[in-house]
Image 1 (cartoon, protein in one colour):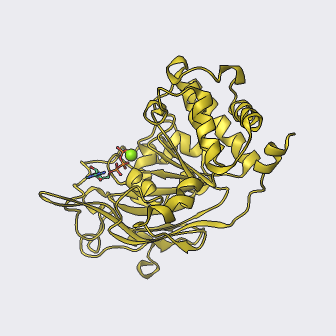
Image 2 (cartoon, protein in one colour):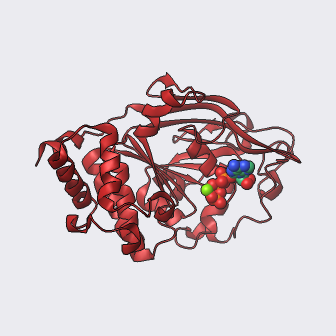
Length: 331
Ligand SMILES: Nc1ncnc2c1ncn2[C@@H]1O[C@H](COP(=O)(O)OP(=O)(O)OP(=O)(O)O)[C@@H](O)[C@H]1O
Ligand SMILES: [Mg+2]
């Protein structure tokens, strides 16, 4: 193994990467503010794989992007490795922007079509280390090999690759700066199922080798079950359930989580299938419902639900649920 490969080999540990407290991202508009993220508390650890799930428009991408200052933060704080981020200073955000790399659904949107793979990777490598020409060449070849691409393809342009290969190139570029966290926003939803599986396999094996953490933003509960250790369920700007993945699928606590799982044929468990999908439309984030935001659609609601906002109550088995049914005072 070469020196460069050894250097990026690191042991996974449970060091805390991000501490998010009461985070709010409100987008002002003509008819009021869209409360895209509305009071999120969250810790992310190094080396872990976390999935962020919820229906379209619930604020997943806005929350994920807020970690690196790509969403305008209205209130709340984000600490990265113990240090409070100052979102007003681009210079001071530089280290976190490097440590967190983004990989998107459509690599076309993130890869420069005018740059060869070699130029794209060389640019990324130069961001974090100074190497001579031969060193850069070697690093490029290693990166391509690590994502399962033939280094002899380095002189081609993005359009000369398949969708799955392009996604591998974006992963290679993300790895080039040796990130602590890779944020994957719907990375596989544009790919065929078999190519999806290959990319997920690749991400898993890279994690074992490099100890990088992942935050997967996704609609796909099948993917969550396959890859995530921990799951965050989001509804109308808030986290409503935070659980270990195994527990979430075998014993979901929040009625919304149960409905999501029950409406996903690939992962639904027999007892939940009859619950059908989440009924009704998602209410507008301009005017979220009073009390529990899920109450208008909740099959288990009772008198307290429209009146009070539930907290994220810790669950006896670990994790937390924002539902009065998990409030110890209700027992
Ligand atoms: N730049 C913006 N300006 C105004 N409103 C925005 C902006 N970005 C997002 N929103 C609104 O914030 C809410 C959350 O959007 P977000 O993209 O975070 O949802 P999402 O959960 O990622 O959805 P999807 O699963 O469809 O990607 C939506 O109502 C969206 O319209
Ligand atoms: Mg999104």
